[in-house]
Length: 384
Ligand code: PMP
Image (tube, rainbow, N blue to C red):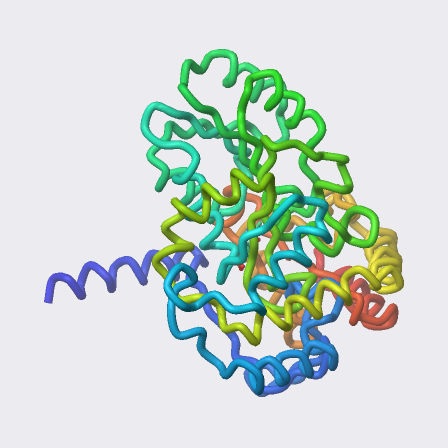
């Protein structure tokens, strides 16, 4: 069948380019120690930065939540899927990050895919950092606003784009901590531009929540941003150790999003047991300074130990990108590490720019210094 022939050809070219994606199956998890495709491995590729994903407090909260509410929410939020558990989680999240109010979604992808279309549309413009997460690109495209992508972190280029634009409404959108590089956006300068050009500023703090700012309160507190023009997105499947996401901001904006965001309205509400687990996670995040300090020590241990530090993208966060270059070389290095029980993924285009295939090392408070030493030694031995 010709349709299948076309697919076959696509697979062949993916394979030839070293771009075929594979997933590995985890059979057992004990913190960062996992059984992966039948092999024991230390996980250096999760976003569980504080090691909370299997924390007993969260496991108990999930079990208690299931006993109290059952499993499924049974409907979308605006019909009958909104429980007290969601309400409480929203209040706790808003207070934690320093926003007036919050709206809970099932995933960060859904926040980012849906929120922009509620704020901007045809005749408007979105200004996006070139290295923004894919979900932000999709959200901008779905909004039908004009999309301007500015070079990574380049506030002067963004300023020029904004000055040249005669769009009705403008929205600047950026990751706070970039997901594949680990560096932090110049949020203060972006906020100044948003004020000057009367634009919305949407900050995706997926990798900052729980990690940056006092008590891990995230980007708003880290940069002192409290303004009705700022929309904050936090995700709960990373440092918080659970699943889900929220958008937070001034009450009228969040009320507007509740009215208009299709990825909120037309989907089943998150299981309330997860909302209870999220509330428990907020308590753990607030109290996790020791875990954050431990991760900071592991980050500097890794950066000091690698023999070719110039390969590391500058980053103070648990995301440490070790640039290899060619796709096959990155795959080979990741394969050699996996053979030694070290699970670090090779990240390739289109997730990262051509020629910058890399190991994306994620550190976690659940790692020990000796596990990081093992990783450093293996990378040094296997890098030509
Ligand atoms: N934003 C960023 C920066 C991310 O890295 C991710 C997840 N990889 C998301 C949003 C999507 O969040 P979720 O996994 O909750 O859909």
